[in-house]
Image 1 (cartoon, rainbow over the protein chains, first blue to last red):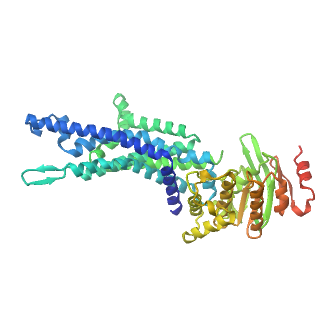
Image 2: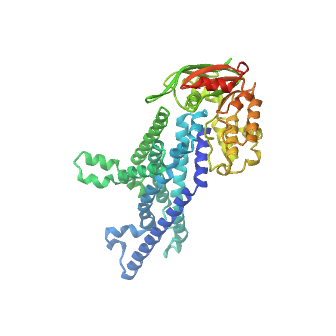
Image 3: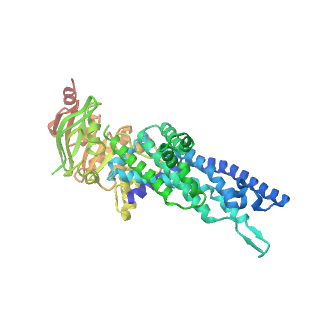
Length: 275
Length: 233
């Protein structure tokens, strides 16, 4: 356990002393703040229009129902962007995990100290989850801003009521981190196969992207392939959790995918010694 | 007691035979020079002994433990300096040594003292707070040796430890290795015969994956002539 934590800590130190993590943090904040402002403006516009037109929520078409409250109107809509951003940045965070060790010849150090290879894999993965959680966590400022300034005034009771449902928000973050962790597991495996970080990043991105988009090709397929594809897609597994519904199915699904890729990485690390 | 026992150790890379049925033993507490021309199989043998790479066939035991049947026990006895010092450029020397100490399961309470001890031993105390990426080649090599010394392993396997050092540093490193005699068994791979003459008590020469000489240093009068004649073909 101590070695796993030592490796995880080393990974995080390396992440935070190289520019890569900071570039990713900046990129994520820049892109999501852009979308956040856009969504907030849209939210405001819907509410303004409703006030001037004197319509109640019951008369609004179902497409606009999400704008009833800030949680669904802004934050849940932001998750869509966040998913795509996480999908695109995680390969760049995972690419160095093993490829860099090989290139720097430090892999020999890890493999000749009294540490099991599964401990190396788990330590690295723990560090990877830490950094992807930090990347997703950067965006926690948006719900915080909303909960500080987004209280709705209730004239009947003369009280300000917070409009943000933190349970939904936190569950959404849990889902995003779970998704990010899955991307990192895939990326770690690919990184263990090659010495080149560039190759590792591109291959990992392609795999995650295809896996994400499987749902788009699913409707064109025949049964039972259609159901299988629909089930396997990251996108469909995440949908309910992002809306604030905690289900066992996506938890089992993502944990299994993560486990499979951790085991594959372990096999690949072992196998590379034989060549 | 034998620290290293190697029996008919063979390693083949696809069509090339790197080492061919190597057998030798190294006694505890000895400083052994491991010599051979480039590509003779020195690094391959060291990689197998340290458990980095499995052999194609044959057995290797370190401190009585089979390197492949009980790798963790065998690895605990070894301090290894690979050809390239395995440093992380992003870490400070202290952070790096702390990391290696944790990998080697040095007791938590003695990590700090252990780092100070090896740093002093290898003369890197003044560089402890520098980043590994900013070190000169000589210091990188020393930090590599310091890393191998962590945890006070019984066996040190040093692959060309004086590579890239200036004559003064080279002398210091060799003195350091000599100082380890008795307490540690040292396997020293090098091209520089003069170093072997002054530091080693025993010499192993490999050529094309086979042992061609295995004898005490005292019994060799002219190492250069012997080396050249043995590795001629």
